[in-house]
Each structure stands twice: as C-alpha cells, then as structure tokens.
Length: 307
Ligand SMILES: [Zn+2]
Ligand SMILES: [Zn+2]
Ligand SMILES: [Zn+2]
Image (cartoon, rainbow, N blue to C red; front, side):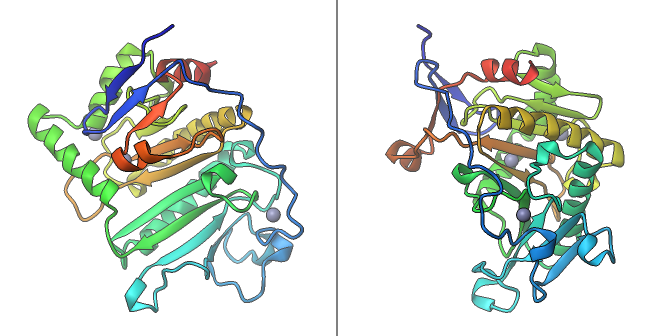
C-alpha cells in the first residue's frame, strides 16, 4: 500500500492530498452524443435572430466552420450597468458528433485562432476575457455539440489575481518565472511530462488537484495567449488533440481555461485542464479548505497520457 502525501503547488500556497489508495476508475461513459432532439448549434438550426459575433470563414453564411453566438441567457450583458460584461458560445465545428479531439490539427488551429480573435476584440472593453471549455455533463456542459465559452468580465477573477500575486513573489525570490522554471526543471525530470515539442510543454503538475490534471505552457515566455506565434498555436493544437483524446478514451469529462495577462508588465500564459470524474463530489473539505483529494498520482497520470 502506497502512503498518501500532502503536496504543495509549485509556487502557490495550495495543497492537495494525493492518496493513491482511494477508489478511482472506471468512470462511466459520457452521455451519448446526438441525443438532443434538436441541437441549437447545428448549422441548420441556428435561429435567424441569433447575434453572430464571429464566423469562420468570413461571409460564409450557413457554411461556416466555426461560429460564435452571443449567449442571451447569461446574467452578464453589455447593456446592464449592474452586471456589465458579455458571454458567448463558440461552436467549434459544424459537425454535431465530432468532439474537439476528433478535429484535424488545422481545424483545432482554426478554433484557437477564433479564441485569439475574440480575445483581442473583447479585451478592449473588459477587465478580463475568460476563455474556457466545458466538456460533458460533469464539467457543466449542457450540450454535446463541441463548443467553448468566452466571457468578458468587468473584473479580474480572484483565482488569477492570487496566481499573479504568487507569480511575482516567486519571481522576486528566485529571480525567475515559475512557469519557465517548471518547463526547465520538470523537463529534465521527465516523470510528470505529458507531452512536449520545441514550442509547447504539458505537465501533470506535482500537486495536481484533479486526477489527470494538465497544464499547457508555451516554452517561450509569452504574456498572453494572443502573443503566440503560428508555430506555437500549431503545437498547442497538437497537444490539445492528444490530451483531450486520452480523456475521451478514459470517459473523463473536463474543463479547461486560459490564463493570460494584459495591461500588466509580466506573466507566463498557460492553460489549466481539469478533468471532472463522475465519482468526485466536492464536499465540506473542498469547499471549506480549497483542498482536494486526488486518487491518481500525477506520475501515474503522465505515464498513461504518454502511452
Ligand atoms: Zn449539433
Ligand atoms: Zn516564463
Ligand atoms: Zn493559472
């Protein structure tokens, strides 16, 4: 029997209880796609009165490959001064049954370029642009048609503020960027490396809070997602295809979200990917202490991702 371990995040005061003896898999399969009677994200079903914020390729009308629609059910709106902001749903493909990992690298690159376009457009009028994806019921997705969401927020989320505060603390103490250090140090150890090429590095973080958690980082010190070069976007697409593909194989729902900065002098852009197993319920421990129990050691997870 392996001993449980308390592990601390690389540069934040966030702890996790890594307990390899707890129950883990099998996870139950995700909901069967194509089950909804009428999918509102399929090209033929998009209502005429939807507000289209992005379409790729441009001027394609109903022959789009990617479309972003204003989410009218969001509590945020650009017209309400009491809840200023915006929310949109970016439909990643016109094919109902294809999940993100089933798209080609070119198609995933197109999705990432759509993120880029939307971020550039929204960051002018918002304090933070949060780009994220919910895949599957456990991750909060109500629709199976592959999509991401983009929020224009009138504030910088506390999670990111804390991360930035600790980023600068580490930078001051060690004279280096914590993310660059992770790439450098973990890249040598290899045990927790999930995937890498010359541009992008993906790690199962030492203190993973979620089983099969992954962080994606460009190897170059890039402040914000929109600064990524074409070659880096392509590498990121390859990493996303590979890693989300593995999660589909494992029947694991997941969330991912992008952490960038702007209007600030420094940061290192990254993506957090958090799988949401159907047997994990957040209870008093998680809510009261922000401490999670992870039954899959990241070393084990990384090995499985690499296989
Ligand atoms: Zn659909
Ligand atoms: Zn860095
Ligand atoms: Zn972050």
